Amino acid sequence: EPAEKADVLFVHPDVRRMLMHAKAWTEGLRALCLWGGLQVDLEDHAETEEERQAASDLIGLLTPVIKGVGTDKGYEIATNAQQVYGGHGYIQEWGMEQYVRDARIAMIYEGTNGVQAMDLVGRKLAMNGGRAMQAFFAMVAGECAAAKGDAATADFAGRLEKALGEMQAATMWFMGNIANPNNIGAGAVPYMHLTGLVAVGLMWLRMAKAAAELKAAGEGDAAFLDAKLVTARFFAERMLPEAGSLRRQIEGGADAVMALPPEMFRAA
Ligand SMILES: Cc1cc2nc3c(=O)[nH]c(=O)nc-3n(C[C@H](O)[C@H](O)[C@H](O)COP(=O)(O)OP(=O)(O)OC[C@H]3O[C@@H](n4cnc5c(N)ncnc54)[C@H](O)[C@@H]3O)c2cc1C
Image (cartoon, rainbow, N blue to C red; front, top):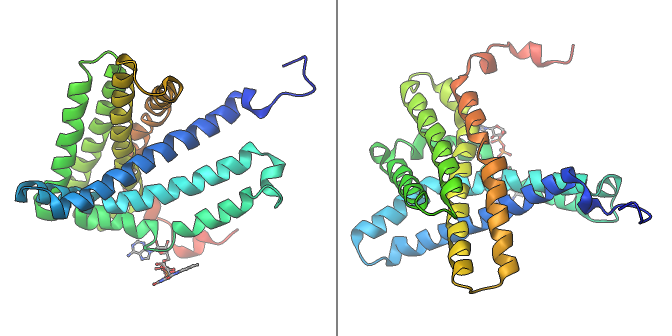
């Protein structure tokens, strides 16, 4: 904006990157929380025993993910928001530093996120012969397959399917390395984030599908629906590729994590 005294922060792609990251994770995680609340209701009130069991399995599996990934992302988003303001984010006047401090505790209380991740891989993953995780895989794979047939959601579905493949490979790796508990402990947090990425990816697939259908029908607020579709695309292009990185961290195992003796952690 050369005619103006200064550019507004919104013109900078890197500022946009941080704001889109915040928007994509916040809206996706809110959808996952609401979906989780629905499973809690279905666990008690669904019509058949089979449906009640399925809801119970899914919310049992994903509760540590909703807590752990939700609060890790909340903190990351708060510090990014501080960064958006530059030096003004660091000082007290604008309130961002208070958000950062407030968001930090949620990663610690109600079970630290490290312990939430241990609950996921050490207990929930293998419970009932892995029934809940198998049901989660089938749900994501089924919705991806259906969405690939629709031009509006095909690209997103293909990318989510790929992320699911990384998660399934990481799960197989855990199964083959269960004899070494350090491998499980060292991979637990990346696995929790991989699961969260795929679960929030599923929420964005559903939101993109709903937005595309409403748009095609000429219903709803067009600007709101377009924003949903753009944010879904951002999540697909910029967030889902992290699945490959998380898988490789898990498959790196615990050797380098556990190798150093405690005295080597002192500053030299
Ligand atoms: C402001 C605030 C408010 C709180 N409010 C409440 C409250 O209202 N009610 C209440 O009951 N508690 C409350 N707490 C306590 C809170 O729940 C605990 O601080 C939290 O559960 C972590 O326990 P800890 O502090 O003993 O840490 P530790 O358990 O000692 O954890 C230290 C580190 O070790 C890791 N760790 C520990 N065990 C394992 C393991 N087995 N595997 C892998 N990693 C492990 C943890 O993830 C963490 O990184 C509050 C704490 C704070 C700071």
